[in-house]
Amino acid sequence: MSRAPLEARRRAQARTRRLRVGLILLVVGVVLALALLARTASPPSGRAPSGRAPGTPGGTVSGVARVLDGDTLDVAGTRVRLYGIDAPEHDQTCRRAGKTYACGQEAAASLRAFLGTRSVTCQRRDTDRYGRTVGVCRVNGTDVNGWMVAQGHALAYREYATDYVPQENAARAAKRGVHAGTYVNPADFRHEGAAAAPAPTASRRTTPYANCAQARAAGRTPVLRGEGGYNAKLDGDGDGRMCE
Image 1 (cartoon, rainbow, N blue to C red):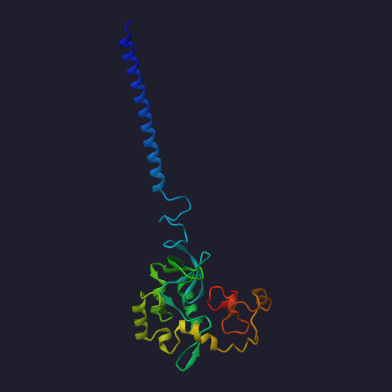
Image 2: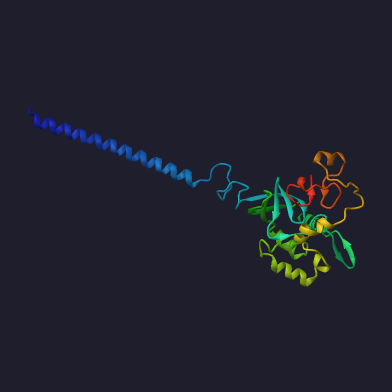
């Protein structure tokens, strides 16, 4: 047999093998590419539907809320500072009809009554310097932040947002909540008023507690700003409630 046909046949077989290998590699590459695409398109396990981990900016937290004060909630273990509003501090007082009343406690009580045991959903906007979630909370579709301002139990926190200025203007015109009398802006109270506020007569301690264990042993927790024994260093989130 001539060597020429034999060499031609070998070259043809080699080309066929190379084509088969190339085809196999192409198929494997396509399969791997599709698998990678499917993996990146699906949210990883444990992530929120938005693709963000629960509790990260832009995420949500839901559950029955525990009211800490007029603008702070505890929702499913996450402390949420209501975005864009500022309520009177827990120990703050205001004037109405010629009398002094605990407007800070009234704000918290009104928020507590409004929420009841209904589930709250809070959309995270930011995280404040104390590590708290700053968010807009809703219950049955109602904006809780806006409701507090509209009822006069909180002010629009203009230093950070103007979203709720219309609700504040309406509450002031209708003389609802704190607008029915006189009050100190909560921010001013925190910066100035609290330092000048007299301690309640029930609290005679003149020196700050060194630690929370000491305050608890005295049956005094939480210790409010302005009360005897209050130590700002033990008020980690600066909400005026030490060792809560």
